[in-house]
Image (tube, rainbow, N blue to C red; front, side, top):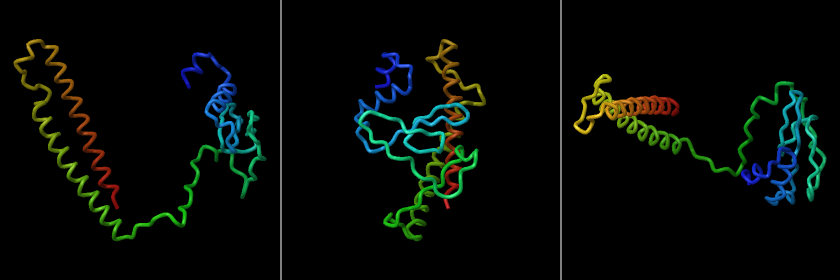
Length: 176
């Protein structure tokens, strides 16, 4: 869909949005699409009403209900950039008791510690083979460029392994 819009050369975002919605069959949906133009001048198309700078778009075959009423105090000027509060958990959402969660956390910790041990061992082997930046040349590396490629690949592997070790340590520290 996106490539066909590019090929058609549709520069008007509103026309492209209307065409995309019509093609996807979303024009028959019960939702509302808003065109929001905040004071900074940017334009955003969304299905969430964001205040007085949002206007419901008239799309063919789409019923346009009135914008929702705001509840509570009016939003501050910088409130649009702050993340929304997480939604409340539904009452029928499955819960896990404390003992079960502790058992899961213990299993997770054991798995992560095992991965950390393996990754640390792999890192030690890579560093040993790397030999402080001067690994031994192999017989198939008569060309110095091949040797340099292997050394660069070893550096990348060591760096990746170090990042894995750090990430695993952070993950273990985050377990309750």
